Length: 432
Ligand SMILES: N=CN[C@@H](CCC(=O)O)C(=O)O
Ligand SMILES: [Zn+2]
Image 1 (cartoon, rainbow, N blue to C red):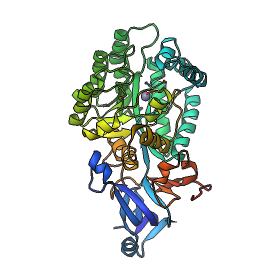
Image 2: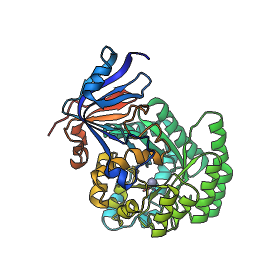
Image 3: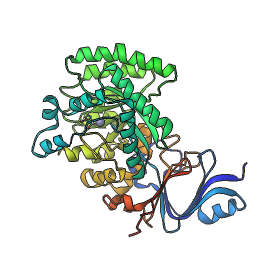
Image 4: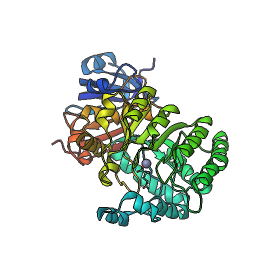
């Protein structure tokens, strides 16, 4: 075995490894007993994978004489896995700050959408934008996410609604994947709204007969990598039958299902997700008891989005009922022009206060369970030997400060590390 490694992090006060038995996800009990090590060191190899995680003394002894490209003395600091954001819409042009004012004055999300604003407004601007413009703004947004501790992010298309713009968005995501440090899971979301001038049936047919075959061709040629398929299943958008047809066509071409459901109206989307073996259904503010039971049984994870319920003043998703019944709960920022939030620490804080998650539950939901929602919990989501060396070093002697200090992550996160490389070092941390 080689005696030369990429990174040695020594003497951390705490390392929150999250789980240590190769679990693919955690449900309520596992989240409660999340694995925390005191006085710990970690080693990451030149392949970017974790080689050792354990007591500082024994790691020091075991690796005496080894050569490290970089050593970080983490005395008094904490190590947590890189955060995983399981739901974002980060590729778009044209902000909607004017609509924020309308919503503050009482307009509902759907009233704005049906009046031609909302997603339609963003579609108009995104269709006009060049690939380079979209890539520039995406890069800035993903950089903000990275500096807030996100090391893997799901990125959706969905502001094109016609083939060329959907492909342009997916190509922008692909270029970001190839050039940026942050990990990306790419999602085709051509069924994000029914385009103006088309019926639901026409839009569904266009997606199944035109968009998906083209996507399949580009994926086969190695031009694009797409991991997931998404539909906005909602009253006045895509109904349950058209949602099922689109998701089934996506799964037939090898995409993982991860879709918007039961957000503004109860749609039985959770049951549909369970029936189709979806990896995840997002939102779920209006999920029924039967939907919760079906998701628990099928191991379809619930991606909860605290910013959406907060900004739109929706009822909170019933996170406690989901946890009590064994649903795999994950978190996402839902970054989009309606919910402009790049920070998973703030998302975790909102999940704790508004959805009544414990801090342990919030961290598990933003790490191992978000990895599960994206189908990557074999390689991501915990600090276990053999997994990718993605982690944060926090300038605090207790990890919970990352959640407790609302908005304080900018002064707390000292290092963001991906595959053992320091991708962000923050000189402005303060340890109180
Ligand atoms: N609900 C549908 N999609 C997004 C909002 C997109 C938008 O308003 O631009 C969401 O998840 O919140
Ligand atoms: Zn969304």
